[in-house]
Length: 391
Image (cartoon, rainbow, N blue to C red; front, top):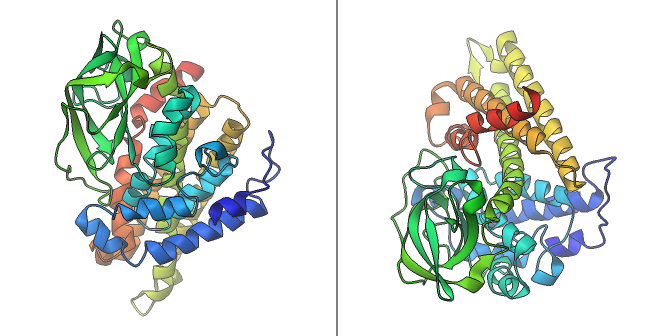
């Protein structure tokens, strides 16, 4: 369905408008999917701490999982704004956890698609895009956090296998992932000693903790992965040995863009909820939007959302045109998260006590928002990246 609607779109290097009729048709189809397959159940899935595995297959069948991936691998080809529209509509579920869970393939597969062999793509990409396997990315370590260049998980060559030892933490989709795109140390200390391996779940020595209990993103399963003398075939090496850090950096641009989009949508939905509530809720004899202080608060919220969204779209446009945006995407992520921090806070404030209740969407948006300025590189790391360009 989604794939058919995207057919015929031709990618260009410049954009007069961000979204074409094709983008809007895809957006409409995904919104219908979310309305039918997700919204009636999302509250239960949030409480359960996961959504049904069968949703991957359903999302694959309509082309959501393959959005932006090559058609020859089973993907739904299209420019970067198909990805933007897809992420925005998935966020309409009201659950950042669901969006991150279904979307874990978008950070796990790109290194394989870009640097992998044909055999790797057939084995590790096609089944994931078909909803038959689940892929996760393993970068963060318990003792490292954002310090990717100094990760300690080792992979020592032993014949035609790598012997892998270490652990990864805060891994989205960890408890159900069939494969892990894993950053390992194959060389000396620092960024130039890092490689990427695909490690399959059934590898002896591979184990997963129980689901970690989180402040937000309840519907996504997050856990720690332990690697104890895992013998991983040498053929699972993605690209060249000791060149994995560069693939990770390229991946980060896409991940940070996705988080900026999620932050903008979190803020937009919180704004929408607050506007609707202010039209209905009465206090001291009149509706909340009858008070200047409320109207002005909503205006400030709306202005921030519009500015942040427009900047993010502009960065996405340049990334789609092949222009490096390391500085700008870091700025977009930080700004979008700052906006979302304020807008979700203010939305809860407008709702008053009801905003503190789990029966309201703004309460979940407030909780889900908190991870966005941490995941994909913290606000502080983004500032360090930006400072290298401006200071």
